Structures are given as structure tokens and as C-alpha cells.
Length: 311
Ligand code: 2P0
Image (cartoon, rainbow, N blue to C red; front, side, top):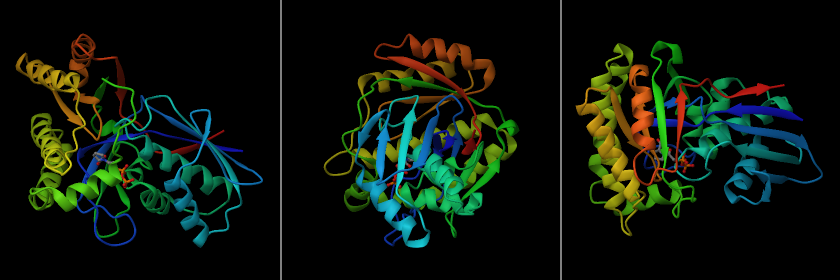
């Protein structure tokens, strides 16, 4: 048996929309930070036939089946039992597919001696779930053309940001990200503007990270997140991932900032709020969000390392 760990990542410049060609390629450059406080643990072992266990329950997953088929088109991979567990809500906007595919290719690579380096693992992770390409690496990670393998931008100790995740629902999302982003591409009247702005947002966020300029990063990341949700909301049928508690948390983050705290929010395809802050503000942010009506729990995290095999 081989075991791998991976962390989910949250995008500060988002991926929402694919290119119209094979390979699961994002339409726009995107970048993320890895979350040490949330972990996927995946065990891979030989089995008579493929079996998939998610959070201790045997399940079927067409996306995983297609991905294994593609992998077996290139490598000799025997039937496997894949047993994967998350210590955080699954399929609820906390990037469980990112950490899931990153942990899985890392475990299979070691278990089956595929000989992949990190870049190649990132490419295979991307085929499963594009955001998973980023979870192969730790710290600050970009997913950019022309190769669309993730690239580490900066290590986690370059800028030890903290993240407070406010969980407002444990329910799995009703529309998965792949389906949602295709709907947005086809129907949102603002999709082209979203794609056009992404390169500028990516450049501004990259520069802010390089300079550790929190105010600049906060401005570009928060606006980029709201642009993505505008695309979601103007898709037909609409994609509305927020709960009243999500909105209350965003308002609370804005008021914390007015009180002088270094914090901004970002939200993915789900109702959870991620408040990114400097360490000096983390206690105040965690306490304010845990007291916000509708918040079920807060999870605190520093920045994490990349996917890895563990003994
Ligand atoms: C991101 N999300 O950049 C964005 C923000 C969701 C909102 O990447 O179809 O699960 O498997 O490639 O990677 C979620 O998309 O989609 C995602 P697929 P994935 O983090």
C-alpha cells in the first residue's frame, strides 16, 4: 500500500472556464495558495478490480474512471483500490477535487513506479481536475500557458499568510464546477470580459505576491472573485453558490478591514468564505467570523506544502 497527502488550494486569481480543446485546459491563467489546515489522505493498493472508497464509503465516480482510463492509455497501471479521505467537507467549495487528484497521482506514481517528476504529476493531476495541478506544489502556485503545468511562484515562507475558512454549509454543491464553468462560457453575457481581464489580474496579483504587498493583493483578489461570481450569477440558469451567511461573512471581512485589519475574502464554487489575512489579524478574523450568524465552524490554516508520499 502507498499513501500520499495533499492539501486543497484556493485561487486568488480564479479558473472558471475551459479552452475548447482536449486536455482540460483553463481558458485563463490562475494562481493559488495551498492550505496546510485541510488535508486529503489517499491510500492506493493492488486489488482484483478497481474500487474507490471516499470518506470510508465505497462509491463510483465517472470522472475518476475516465481519468484512470486515460492514465492506462499511457502507463501500465494494475487494478487498484483507492481509499481517499478528507478532513474537511467534500464537494462543497473547498477544493476537494484539487487535493484529491493531486494525492491520487502522487500515490499511484509511487505505487506503480511511473517515474513522473512533479511537473508531469501536475499535468496528470490537471487532466483529472485543473485546479489539482496546483496542489502538487506548496506555497504560491500559478497555472499558466503555454504548458498548463502548475509552476511554483514562491515558497510558503516567502509570505506566511494565514487563512480562516468560515464553513456555512456542509452540503455538496448542486452543480459541479466543470458543468458550471461550461454553462458560464456558453451563456454568461460577461464571459468574454472575464477572460479578457484575467491576464491583467494575474499580473497584478503576481507582482503583489512578489512584493508582499497585502493591500494590492487584497484589491485584485477580492475583485477577481466577485467578477467570477458575476459570471456565475449571469449564467443561465443562474449559478448561485452563496448562502445568507456567505454574504454576512463578506460584509464582516469588509468591516474588519475598516477596523484596521489586514484581511480580504475569496469564495469559490460553494458557500464557504475564505478570509486571507496577515498573522497579526488572524485571531480577530477567526473570532469575528465564528460569531457571524450562520457560520457552522471556522478552520484556521497557514500555507501548506505540496503533495507528497508518506510512510
Ligand atoms: C479555482 N475553481 O481556480 C476555481 C474557482 C472553482 C472556483 O478550479 O472541471 O474542480 O475538474 O477542471 O478544478 C474548480 O474547478 O474543475 C476550480 P475541473 P475544478 O480554484
